[in-house]
Length: 202
Image 1 (cartoon, rainbow, N blue to C red):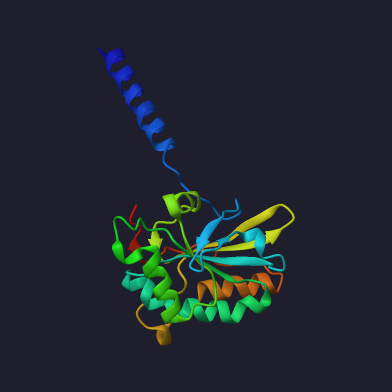
Image 2: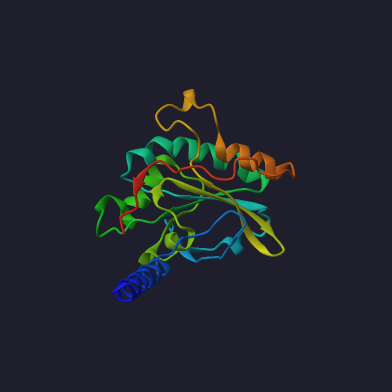
């Protein structure tokens, strides 16, 4: 009887492990992020390899409809304005399925980018193949990458800062601190934080 129970438990654990192994966990700090080719709001495809002079990237999974994403839009614009000239441009990606969330359609993305005067790519993750590779779960969810001879290494994952409600009340600017460290050739101290935002609509 004990043998039967043990075998049943073993099979159950094995099945659970197999099930979990099929779930993409995404990148961890130190991993090399593969490149992608996604459609920008101007209709052109954009890849990380297109940015020849970049030293790295601020990849932000964001969208139109989410109030958290909207609250951070001006700060995302400011990040691009501050760090593009230092070699770390913003690459924004909308991971949501437009069939599930109509406000995140490609046409709505184009309207949003025009209204907000985005000076950075705003890409659609068609088929939703890229956000699972990264492991993004929220909008916004940020990945700071550093370009190296080995590839684009993930150096920071998480939130933009510690206060989505009030930019003036922010005490910890996680993304800025990470990029500032990389620009100065230093190690990023806070490598990962919890992303706060709307769940991605798959």
